[in-house]
Length: 89
Image 1 (tube, rainbow, N blue to C red):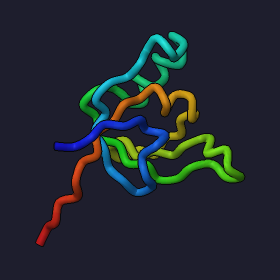
Image 2 (tube, rainbow, N blue to C red):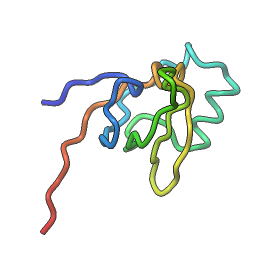
Image 3 (cartoon, helix red, strand yellow):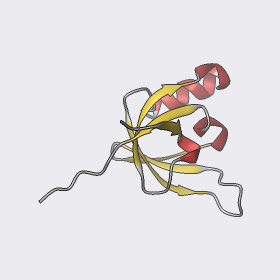
Image 4 (cartoon, rainbow, N blue to C red):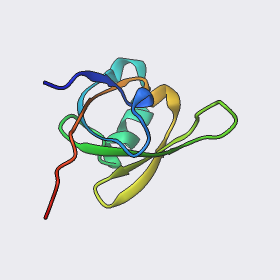
């Protein structure tokens, strides 16, 4: 069983599945933007990079074949569940 956390707390290079989004904490315009970029429940994301100088803002994500950047405040509103890596031979 995997434990859920928020996207901002996910380790770098870790893949996770979006399990819930607190749309109430995100403005309607920003919510539309996130949905247009493919962020929604059930989507697989990988945290690639985070901002420098201790601010950790913005956060770069891989969503499908795209790399997108989200604000840390948005990442805090996105609950994810770690997806274990699969070994391919």
